[in-house]
Length: 187
Image 1 (cartoon, rainbow, N blue to C red):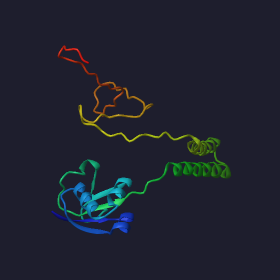
Image 2: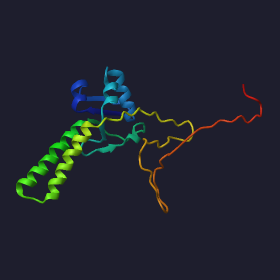
Image 3: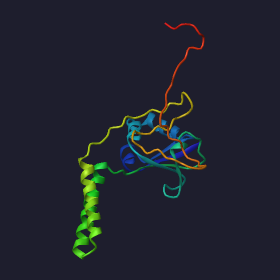
Image 4: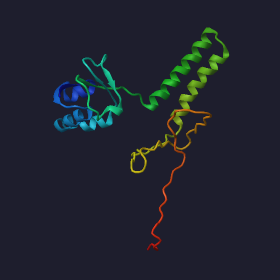
């Protein structure tokens, strides 16, 4: 089905803003654009994007990452870059906000607990700037055994639920063992 794929922001500046393609899914559209535009695939892999389906990027149907390869109904695809903050920027923001809270409260004669709260937010920003960042490796999901495991990092709290609940499980420990069922000795 012919549809218009519209790019916005840095993608539009680098590759152009509008493309007419015969595609049924978002994955197909990205593959088609990647085949025609050098560097498009790398830009998509490195960035974060919001994708909507419809006449407008604001009023359209927002697509989740689960719908990347599904066939989509009629409508234009809008690929919009999402601005993301760096971790150090968040730390500096905490320092600024905490300092502003503490100084404004002190200057206006506010309560002491609000001054200490502002100071604590500022100190939290300083400590997150000074603390080392844990580097996490990219984990590739494997569907080889029983679907994708919900693997989490070390140190994450394990939920304890009483009664019936519908939640995603967290794998605490997993292992694979092999056994020779023929009874023959192995070399």
